Length: 317
Figure 1: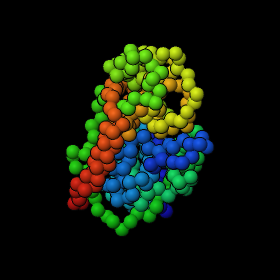
Figure 2: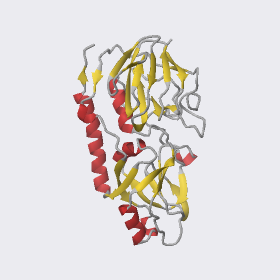
Figure 3: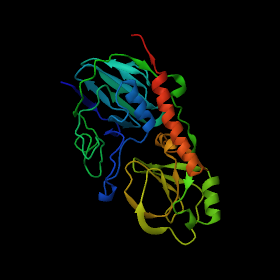
């Protein structure tokens, strides 16, 4: 059968794709991958559409046993993948055969790895997406994280059998000190000038309270003019909420659809993959950019993915 068996699920492994759009008014969050660059790159390496669903593994990778021959690619966090206990490269197509086992060693950098399968994952499309929404218990594989003995169905791979490797220049390094570019607003007018200065000039620390919903940071307090509460409004991925504690929270893929705390800024879309790979202890600084600069950065991000696909090189078996 075309499937992969879960021998061990790792710390948190879920099915995710580009996300579930168009249902925020119904309280259904977008979900989807945290690191869209690694997600799309993995699919490119197995000749899938970039938006196809993959497995997203957090901090500790799963052990998977293949029930069929196919091709896979592992990108994102440096989790040292192994096939039948032998090291295999990341950022490269890996041919696998029925009975093979994929496992991972200790993570060496980053936070989330992505496993793409040639042909894709054969799970139901719900509201336009295969992504797992764990709070709503919908999408992905039975609406939950993977568990031991799950049998995750795969689509039959295409007849394409090329093995690709990414060009070195397109493989990211995950630093423990990052700068995130932000557009101020939508409620930056509710913070004092000193509060905004604190936000833009402080080195914040990622706390252990970080997950797919958001990243809590710790650093110099950001001062409000008259309190942190607002009438609830919509929240996008990358929104930087500042509750009454004055400590920022960056909301991510599994965020709530609305929120009642002031949002001082929004992380530009192009920098979200960098944040998605940050572990507890990572140091973060913020740099203000304009809306026009954020749009240009997103354009460069998509050009980078096009160049990734264009410059991948075939590897002789």
